[in-house]
Image (tube, rainbow, N blue to C red; front, side):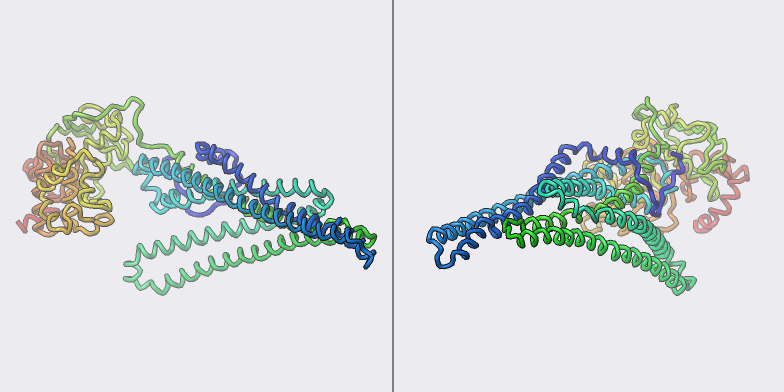
Length: 631
């Protein structure tokens, strides 16, 4: 899979793929014992359910339409008043016996129905449990894989698509592969058990019931083609509808500035109408399909009544009272149990095909290799001195569009280096490459003389503290955002770090102090407050190398002073690489690196570079003029 792997947004039709199905069932394999138990319970439920029609047949033929009692009653009628007391007594005895045995049979039917309910309940619980465990395993696997992916992959795949893979697609697979496959097994088991009972009782009547089945399959085949087509079209249209809404909400400021509300509403209404029309088309297909299947099922029952009813009338006309009326009742019930699963199988197959599309997207994501991985013999990054060396580094986010060109610079342990340059000069790429968010295409980057690609990735990043211009805080408390899951950091240490970088005063004024909930992305805090929390977080984890994007353009003067003081404190005793925006940072740096179009143009101290009157002098006059005047 290429590094530019792109995840699909819309529904795509996929044929049944045995390889995908085997891979999907691999998630169920750890729970195969439970699934086997669920299938056995389904078989038991199917047998219990279809025993009831046979017992109903027995109840009608033996106790309600009892041939022996009918003969006695006919004999008593023929004898008239001359009927002997023994005949009348025998008739009454037969009636009493029939009532008793009929009541016992009714109780047995009730017990069987209750037992079937218990079995189906147990089966449903097992299937639901396996389904949730399967979905948990798949989502955990996806989440873990996403955490290992490079920023290049995340840049090329929008968050919305990745969220859809982890949520909607996984749920679709869980419903189809676990619940759906069990339901398919249930349908086939029910059909098999019903056929076994019907052929056991009367094979001729069984063939009569099965006579409409070819028409059922033909109808299902035609319906499946049209229903599948309209289902996919609905998915495509809803994807376009959602994408348009998301785009409009995200760009609402531009929409309102340029007065596009009416035109955008008209476009949304048209897309919504297209989705509505396609939905109605699918409803019409279902409105035709289900009545046709119901008609064929009713036709099977009518054929049973027609052919078996004629036999009953013929036998009664010949004076044979031992006719099986209960058979009609039994086969009517069996016909209902037969055609229900047959009708459902069409939807089951469609669901399986839908799962093929979802699974292909999920496995496409899981099969995307880690672009930034650990070497087989990766070493732990511990006890660093902090020396950093960029040796003839070439780097491009896109092929042949170099962001860094032959960058060659050595930074001594404990040295403070500022990087300046116009936007797009390649300054931020230093951060990305040193932390191995990306890997270089040419050259090498070493820390303490060891190539960063030779270090274990997680331990390398723990040794580098990064504070970005756009500070990201997670939902939760301030303490949680400083600790970031490291329970080895005690509360005193967290508070001491916050105090050291000037964050403690504003934290103390918040409701709850360190327990204050910062909201999503830290929305409850100001820009300056978020930066101070980020400084406390970096200090708490005590990195040997500090990488800092030091923007303070959106903060007030008092907060800026606190931030500048925190930066100075944070850089003490550490190798520091700072993308400099403020004059104070530049003046206090040991060296300044001037970037231009991905190349290092000048290197030196503040005074040295000013004396050269080169690119740095020009940048200094343009970029820091306002600061000079304000000073």
